[in-house]
Amino acid sequence: MDELANHPWGIAAVAAVMVAIICALMEKRRNDRVDLERVGFMPWNLIMVLSLIIGAFAAGLGLRGL
Image (tube, rainbow, N blue to C red; front, side):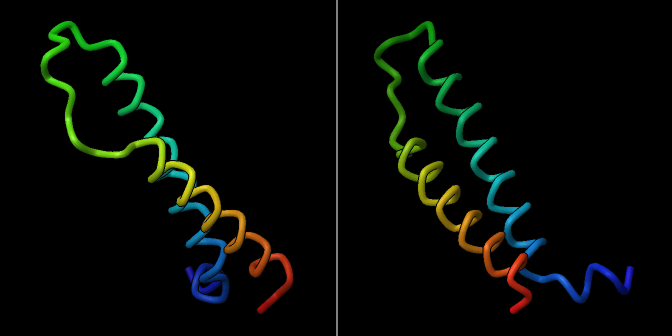
């Protein structure tokens, strides 16, 4: 467990990618809806892209060793 404490950027990168995966699943669920009148209000694509950018940034910092 001590190894994970030394890599906060790696943990942040994995968490951001997990958020992106959840957003992709939710966007697929919205596209496959039966009732077309229930559109929803969450911008899943924007959240997914931003979390992927944050994940890439965090992974870069983690690999660099900052």
